Image 1 (tube, helix red, strand yellow):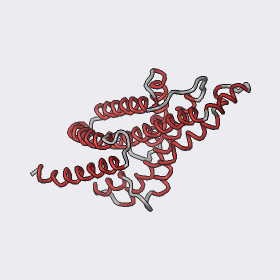
Image 2 (spheres, helix red, strand yellow):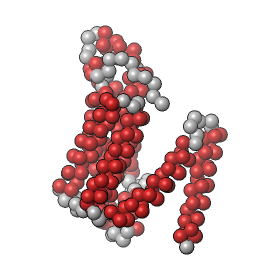
Image 3 (spheres, helix red, strand yellow):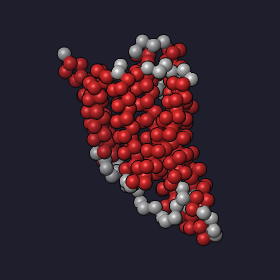
Image 4 (cartoon, helix red, strand yellow):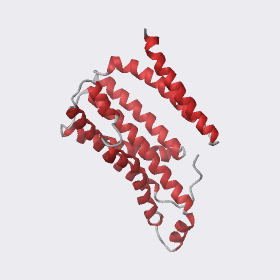
Length: 248
C-alpha cells in the first residue's frame, strides 16, 4: 500500500532529476550531477526527519534539539561556501544566530504566532534555512566583489583609507544583492508564487485567511533575519587587507 502511494512520486522525481542532468549535460556545466545528488540527499533527509518528528513534534526539549541540529548544519554549510576557517565559522554562527534569535523573539514575543513546540519548529526551521541562504549569498557576493575590484580597493588603501572604508561600497552592494531573492519572493507572493507555508497550512485544514496571516509573518521573519544576518556577515568580512582567494 505504501509502495503504491510512493511510486508515482518516485517516478516523477526521477524524471525531473533526469531532465535536470540532461539540460546541464547539454550546456556542459561543471558539477552537473550536483542537483541530482542534492535531490537524493534531500529525499533521504526528509524521510529521516519525518520519522523523527512524528514522535517529538510536541516535546519542547526535542524540538529545541532539532532546531540546534538544523542551525549547526546551516552554519557549517554557509561556512564551506565562503571558505572553511575558524574565523568564517565564527562569523557565520554569530551573524546567523543573532538574526534568527532576534526574529524568533519578536515573532513569539508579540504573539504574532502562538509559542508552541509545533510552531517553533515550523517557523524556526524556515528562518534558519533562509538565514543560511542569505548568509551564503552575502559572503560570496562580497568576497567576489572584492576580488574583482581589488585594484580599486588597493587604490583606496594606498590613499590612506582603512580596510573597512576601502570596501564600504562593495559591502553595501553585497547586503542588497543577498536580499534580492527574498525581496522578490515577498513582493510577488500571491501573484507569481504560493509559498509552501501558505499552501501547507491550507492543506492542513486552516482557513485561507489564517494561512495568509501565517505566511506574511513568515515572510517578514525571513526578511528581518536575513537583513541582520547579511549585515553582520559583511560587516565582519569587510576589513580586507589582502586579496581574497577564489571561491569554489
